[in-house]
Length: 129
Image (cartoon, rainbow, N blue to C red; front, side, top):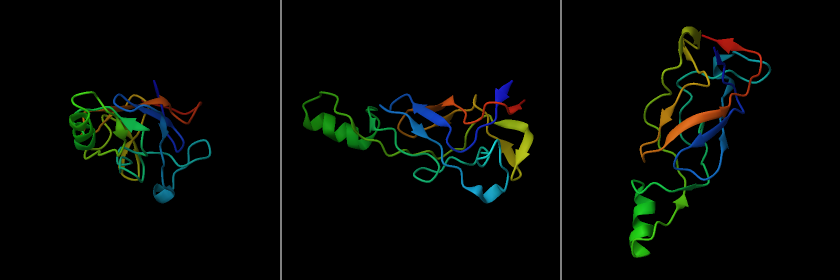
């Protein structure tokens, strides 16, 4: 069984260099072991998903430009997440704010090719199917 994700959950991007923590606003009025519980719509860049240090994806235009300027040597640039789609798959049997709850098995795709996943869900006791 998966764990419920809440504010402060630690995330990692496959194209990022550093971990980041999830920010969940208390708009859904559901708390989980203290902090606000997350749902699949908590994917907004720079509001819910903060940068992961530097980005190493050649699909990122800033990385591509810096790499071209360095004559083809991969040059990481600051991460600015771009997540157009919500977390998937979530937990459709548990609703938070009329949307599926976010569990630690969910993933979010960055438009620059990175896959964002959870390394620590922010909860230790709350399990969801």
